[in-house]
Every structure is written in structure tokens, then in C-alpha cells.
Length: 159
Image (cartoon, rainbow, N blue to C red):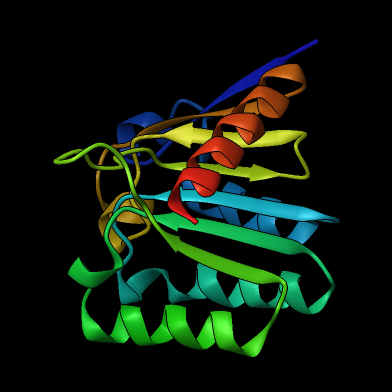
């Protein structure tokens, strides 16, 4: 059975009793037991606290795979942080997306333990997590497993 919950950012969305994307993202990574998978279009230094949580998860033995659209397009601080994260823990793989010529990875997905997945419009940036009006779905169950398999395929193609 699949359970779905709507998440968001923006005062008009959150005032409806919808949970915010940022805290749910943090909760998911903190609760990870075996695996965190991420597909990332844009990552900025305002989301380094998310990478801190990823690092803590890896230190607990959680395998982490992050597929980034184009690491070379990220600013220097982000590239350095990603490299450091990868070098400091063998549990972490950070891959540069490789798709068809001219294509981009525009997905924003986090899958934890193949049981919970956050799928939405938010980048890992201040705007995506807090400032913009974003919508996401928290999916639990069989659909999360299917999303994990999609991430596996993209990670394999990007290896």
C-alpha cells in the first residue's frame, strides 16, 4: 500500500496545515537506517545543513548516493563541500549526471531506506526549502521502492 502526503513551502500553503518541505527532508535523513538516495538539480550553500545531515547518516553506516545534474556548474564552495563529503566517508557516492547529449537531470527526489520518498519541485537551496512556493509529495510504500529503482538506474548510468 502506498501512502501520500502533500508538503509545501509558502505561507498560504503552510497555513492550510500542510507540513513544510525543509523539516520533512531533515527528518527523513535523520531517520535513515540503511540508505539515502538523492537526485539534485541545484544545490547551494544555504542547504549545507542538509549535507551535514547526510554526513551524519554516512557516519552511522548509511549508504548515500547523490546524483547531481552538473557539479561543474555549482559554485566553488558547493563543489568543494561535495568533494569533501565524498572523501571523508566511503559510504558516500556523489555522481555527476550523465544523460543523453544536451539533457539535464531536473528531478528533485530523496529516497530513504527504499520506504519513503520526497518528490517535488524544490531545489536544495534557500529558495527551494524556505523562500519559494514549492509543492512536494511524501510517498511511503511500494511507490518509494519504485522510485529507488529509478534512482539506481540513473546512478548506474552516471557511474
